Length: 599
Image (cartoon, rainbow, N blue to C red; front, side, top):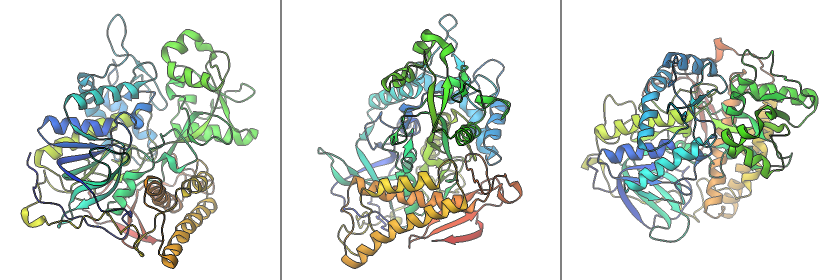
């Protein structure tokens, strides 16, 4: 693979994060931001095709969201199961907003992608006698199709296998690095990223990785809420970068709240222990304090209904009983099954003084997964040429209004392979291009103005938020845009988010000062931008659908709202919220209609 030898122009819009000029730079054909199943799969496939790849990750290679995935990876691998049945279950869970072409791609390419993952070194639990992969069920699935590893440590095993493969392949990695902004060349194509490496060494402080293709695989944004299953690094950095670069995001209002997160008390904040849906798949029951199975009669699958339905069922029961949590009862499993099938969950519960062998587990919903993200086509191309996205940061159209359990790892795997194929076929694909794209020509390359954004101390431009704003944003979002939403709560959240920004902007105008550039202030600023988009979309969608629950609009309205919301960020920081004409995504180059601007 060839790579343009000239330096890319670093376009610095007014919305770019304030940071020092890069003090170092390196070059690659492809820079992958993120080290979960999606990012590492892209890296391995591109490297195998001869591309020079650099992987940038915010913590260590194995510290992303993938390692926390307990349940498994869904694919039609079992006898009697078919991709068509998997497709049907996914479409039902997505509540009318899945892009069927994307789902069909997922379920048909998924089984072979899992087999290639196994060939890479991932070891799934198998029958001792036959060697067949053991499969379980989770919510929304009508068949056993969830492959798992280590009982309830599937993500950790996948991460282990991919990290080992990346290291064996000698792929260049930059750990403990927060990505800042996208670099573009003279024609507006992605040409690398700026980043800040935490710590000292060969590369530290603000630097740049110049590359002909940029792949965002940064994971989720669960840290915009007070309680989440996401790790501390999940601060929406990829979505925020894409917005500042001019890319389109979609469906951000659809945040999935996992129904069964270990309840640690009313003041618990940050990452909370997950109690996998696979526990219910093996026969655990949701009960209230009186032992009543309240999900019976609410859905044909009871506790195994899609996650949005179970989360709503738990929340309604909590309201009815004036309770802060419900219970998951799996005492009938016995000690041996708990120890063999769910050792990670058993250890987490016991660490917090709960023994699921002898007592029900207190559970409540918490922010878990972003069904929306940076909009892509079926090759992972975004609306910015040369910029790709895959995994949780992306919106491929697979999940619609609610992700089907264990489809996330499969989506990351399948679309990562498609991105790698597109990049290596022609180097740095362009959004909406017919066929593979080409490297930038000499005429398109210019010497860079290597700023990542406004100078650290320069007045004007967008301010950075102080680190403590993170907690204010989380409080605003939890109470205004959590499981239960209404026009009133969302409007209040929007106003409070605007005040957070306005106070920082006023200080910048008045005193020429902003928060000191650094990891905590960059993260807070990213969280604020993502929160604004989520609230704006949630306000616009005046219905209840999937994991978007409007108390003041309790019905699903297909006539008006079986369509997607698309959001872009203007150079002045204003959000442009538009809708598609139907549930199908238009190609990235197709003009959208029904434009509405919202500050």
